[in-house]
Image (tube, rainbow, N blue to C red; front, side):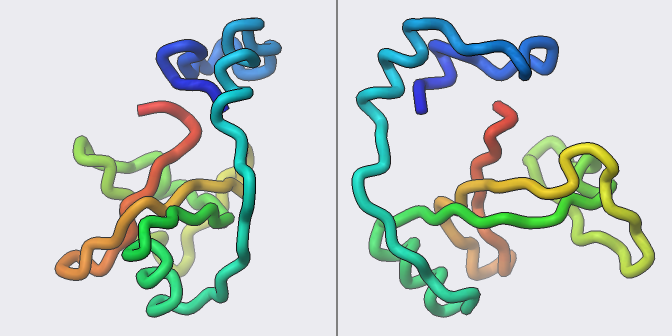
Length: 111
């Protein structure tokens, strides 16, 4: 993956091929080795505490679009429907907040 400063996310060009500079930069940021972890809170927190972020997949609900200014996404309501577009999505967990009982994640859609 290249740095966002080289190929920023813009919705209007989401289906366009990145620039040559983006591909060149991405060569420096390849995943060399990967492991699988179980869906277990202690195991996920341990992984993060050891300095290893992890990728996870989830189903997006309409509440995903209601993130506040700090980027906090509310839990979906029991009767809430899934988003029709981008219903399944992957993100990167980079930390955990014990007090808030929430993961700190990075989304591929930019800021």
